[in-house]
View 1 (cartoon, rainbow, N blue to C red):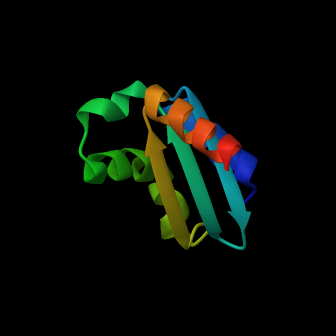
View 2: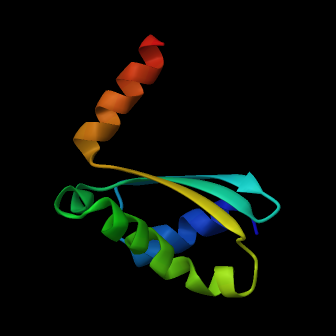
Length: 85
């Protein structure tokens, strides 16, 4: 499974402003940006990202997934902090 394929699945299933996937060998990390996260608990945010990928977990195409979610405002701050560091 290529990271780009996971990105496409998430883009097609969810209304995300940005999505980035990295990883290999069934271990991936997702960064998802959407203002829809603002009203959701962390658990609900994680569930939102997991939901379209359930089949990939069932077939072991994905074994481990790290998820980081941001609103657009949080993502702007995160990028500024990373550029400064």
